[in-house]
Image (cartoon, rainbow, N blue to C red; front, side, top):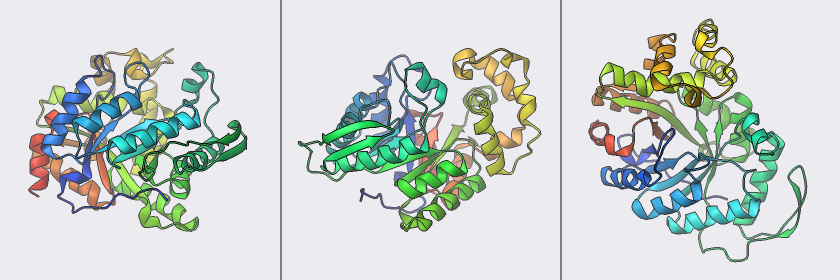
Length: 354
């Protein structure tokens, strides 16, 4: 069984984490400065989302284990199929040793187009289930013999493992089936940005019910709520942080429909966004196809109440209160997105003083 992380009191900043290097970046070395800042203000977890080319999980998380030795280090997320099972397990166990057993491996299923571009199949639930089972065996030092959807492996084993327990493995999930998959097979679930606290509570229930139905302890399944945060910023800068990210996520019809369903929002709004002239003929991700100014302009199609209720915006005190609302709704931990650690000191101070 994977190592489980323990819950802390609500006002404890160890329950808060933040993404390092959010979005598209130029210099991966900025992660070191951001991790050091997170260490100073007491963030519990440093998160890194992989982006091929300049945000390699293994390289940067290894450096962060030394820059922020008190914090958990989390991959949020990488993918099973993009590394050989032995390579991924080796990376996870090495990072677990470097971090003194504070590494968390976050896995995402990605999108079919991404895998098609590199000659890999789209990741099915069958791929995911077989992968997590193989990964756990390798991290535990077991020998793996396997023939199935992932290929053929004979006597595959990691012989030189560090003397640490395997790290928890958590799944990024949006829809009900993925949430059930997380509860049945993983140690936790990373929830999508732009869920309200009530939406987070609904997602948590699905994952924990699945764990219970699988004969697992539902309380062992940790819920990580991802919250876009923008504290004490002028309205135009707040729009750049919140509105631009909203468009990149709501551009995906499948993701947007799930978020609207979980949040009990008006379903008639989404077609207005998707029919915006800027999207005509565009197949690329919005954050790659458009400027920040263009994304902000499109975001104004969305009701302000949506963005306000599913993020943490306004004064540092208001943001701190919203983070508390997510924890009260059932989130075990929060992943702050959009504001890097060196900008979070005042908000964390307000949070711990609650």
